[in-house]
Length: 348
Image (cartoon, rainbow, N blue to C red; front, side, top):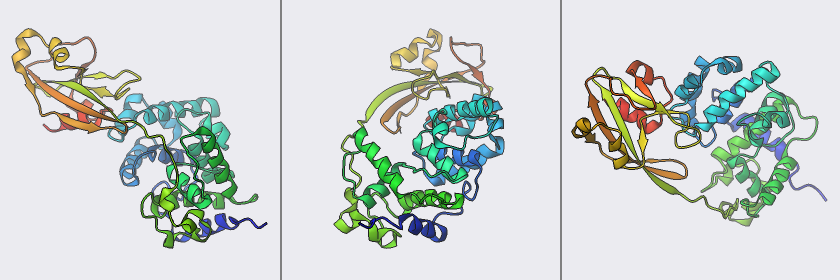
């Protein structure tokens, strides 16, 4: 019985070469450092947002050794505003391990790469296939959608057993043995491009799809119902009060957030669970100097933060709290700060 998906890889590679994304700053390279950096930055982040961060990061840390030897504050500062800050902490830790364990050279196989901090199976496969030509499948969110639709896989991906089947289905589609490094790189990039630009969650552009003739979901007339995932992540909310203590010379009181927790590892204004808790750390003679700022909501992936900033203007930095320090404007600009905190500080 002929394989209904024979030619899938060839069609995709040819399409990627002519119609895929070939001008992004992390493409047209086999440098595993650049591919790794882009893959981590692109997790749950739009390409347009990543471009600027990618360029600034490379300007300061052009290779894995320079990143490993940099400080966490430098790394978090360059990452500030990109979100999902555990990515930055793991990026720094991973660079240190690559330098210590592999003399600064990336392992060439996905299995070894996956054992490093912050590198999951799909990211490991992307690095090894693009940079070293290893025949392995990737399976990020966009690629899951492509595979599920092409293969007509309608099982619930909320179940780990079905996720394993999906990996097998994705692996069956990769180029045949003997594929060149360039073929594997274009195939992997092509899967990403197809999922990002053609096989979209809503209103997929099937007329532009190079593998539409072999797509089971298209033949069924309802590709939007793939993939299937029943478990929905519940959103939560949290209210926080922020103390923006400023001195007349521009210094701001900042402390480093503990790990784990909200904004872990970032420098931040002191946070409190209530207005009463915030007022409790302010001396009595300064209570009338506290000024309530307009509250606002900061949206995280699975949580809404209801933020209540209070401002305290001081003449000099003699007042001290138990955690943190006074930081000058020339310094905090380069620190890793949560996006809403940076906006508060930069408004003046």
